[in-house]
Amino acid sequence: MKDPVVLVGVGEMGGVFARGLLMLGHPVFPVLRGTSLVAAAAELPEPQLVLIAVGEADLAATLATVPAQWRGRLGLLQNELLPSDWADCVDPTVISVWFEKKPGRDHKVIIPSPVYGPRADLLADALATLAIPTHRLKSTDDLLFELVLKNLFILTTNIAGLRTGGTVETLWSQHRAFAEEVGHEVIDLQEAMTGCRFDRDALFAALGAAFAGDPEHACMGRSAPTRLARAIRNGETHGLDLPVLHAIAAEQDRATP
Image (cartoon, rainbow, N blue to C red; front, top):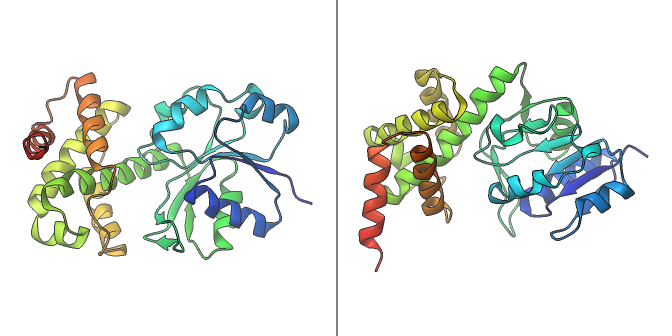
């Protein structure tokens, strides 16, 4: 039997990875909400991987409780992820997930999901059993670019979608100037949060390719207002104005009864 994998967070996305890992022959041990990670680590101290599959809102609290013997074995897959989120963890394996999984539906691939870290092959091989494409990154710089790209996709579509609604194809074909205004402020925020500068032309080109991968992808998900509020708070923390984001927030406030 192959080495076990611990899955922290058994939701839709975690279920996809669990299925792939099981198809490779790895036993998967789920850690359910409310279960002590310390107690779980005492029973299974040396898994091949501890895949943290909780939502981004729960990530910080979850990582704070990860016991020492698991900290060098982590895998992360959250949205809105940046290196500062795992500052206290040793060399995690990180995947920028570019497929969707909705309740009652099979997964839907947008573009290949980039993955980096010591257990990148394990995650890539697991997803390959489900015909989910990945590509292995060569450096931490490549990983950072990919994380910022995913954040650009999520935040731009969600925040711009609060005004435009519709799909990413409509956003890019009919409201591109507005989408790029939002996108530039998102990149401003990513640069402030990482202390790095990014090739904006390359990011917007990759964003267009992601839109082409799923043109009917809805812009505005349920989390859009929360993402906008969080982006504005992060901007204030880093001394950014973000006038377009503030204007959209003001529109939302006026529309709220």
